[in-house]
Length: 411
Ligand SMILES: Nc1nc2c(c(=O)[nH]1)N[C@H]1C(S)=C(S)[C@@H](COP(=O)(O)OP(=O)(O)OC[C@H]3O[C@@H](n4cnc5c(N)ncnc54)[C@H](O)[C@@H]3O)O[C@H]1N2
Ligand code: MOO
Image 1: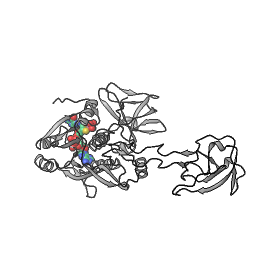
Image 2: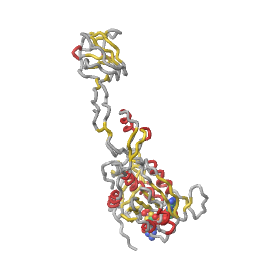
Image 3: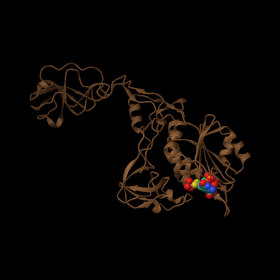
Image 4: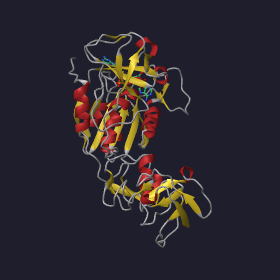
C-alpha cells in the first residue's frame, strides 16, 4: 500500500491554516492574567511618569544658580501633594527621589555633589547640567499611547505595566478547550495494575503536562479501545472541544481505527502522513469547528510532535500572534547520522551553547528515556545524512517561547 507523505514545511503551513484565532473574551483580575492572551490593545491612561519628579535625593534648583550658596526653602518628599510657594532669589528646595518637582526649578543636584550642606543652606557646584535628574511628566509614555498590543501573551513585564496604570481587570481571550485521549486495548492507567502484555498510558499525561507548562488547559478524556464502533461513538462527544488530540491507532495496523472513526463523524482531513522521523503517521483535520490532531502511539513521536506541531496550532487558536518556534544557535559537539530522504527530528541536550545528540541518535520511537535525557530538538533537511562536529546548529529548546516572526528551523 503506497501512501503520499507531505513535507514538514507543507504540514506546518497546513496545520496553521486549519485554525482561526478564538474570539471569545472574558475579563479577569490582574493577578490571574499571567500567561493569558490580551484581547485588545492597552492604551495609556496615566502618563508615565504622572508628574515631573526627581530621580535623585538632592536639591532642586534653577540651573542659573550654579556655583551659588542657596537657602533651603522647603523639604519636599515623595507623596507630598499640592503646589509649593515659588522660590525667592538664592533659594532652593531639598527634594527626595520620586517627589514632585515644583514648576520654578529645572535641575536636581544630588546631595553628594554639593558642598557646605547644612539644615538651612547648601553650595551648588559650578558645573551644572540643566535638566539633570528630572523625570518629566509623560516622557516615558503619554496618555493615549498604545502600551501593549492585542494578542500578546501576558508575562511579568506586562503585569508590571498594567499595574502601573491602575488596571485591575484585564480583557483576555477565553482559554480554548482541549481534549486529550489515548487509544489502545493494551493501555492501563498509572493507578491500575498491569500484566506483562499491558502498558501504562504515558502519552496523555505527558501531553497534558506539556500543554499545562505552556499555559494551556487540557481535559483528559480517557482511553478509547481499538474498536471502530466504540471509537466513533466516543468521538461524537468530542465536538464541543476546540481541539481534540489523540495518540495511537493512526498507522497501518488492523486495529488502527482512529482516522475512520473521525471520518464517520465528519472529519475533513488536511493531511495524514508527513515525511518526518519520528511521527510519520501524524494526521490533522477539522471535524465541524473542532481541530483534530492525531499523533502516533509511540511516546517519542507523540511528545516530540506535540512540541513541534501542536504548540504553534494551539497558540494561534488561543489568539496569540506568536505561533512560530524560536531557534537558538549552538555548536554541534558530536558527529551523528540521520536518515536521508526524511526530515529528522533529533533529540539532544544544549548547554552553554554546545549541542550533544542524545544516545548517538540511536534510539527507538518507543524509548521514553531519550526524551527525559534531552532539552532541545534539532530538525534536519531531507537531504542531510549526518551532522558534523563543529557545525552551527539551529535548535528549538524545550523552554523557549513561541515568537511572532517565522524563523528557519532546518539544519
Ligand atoms: N506497516 C506499518 N507499520 C507501522 C508503520 C508503517 O508505516 N507501516 N508506521 C510505524 C510508525 S512510524 C509508528 S510511529 C507507529 C504508529 O502507530 P499508531 O499511531 O497506529 O500507534 P499504535 O499502533 O496504536 O501504538 C504504537 C505504540 O505505541 C504504544 N502506545 C500507544 N498509545 C500509548 C500511550 N497512550 N502511552 C504509551 N504508549 C502508547 C503502543 O502500545 C505501541 O507500542 O506505527 C508503526 N507501524
Ligand atoms: O514515525 Mo514513527 O513515529 O517513526 O516511530
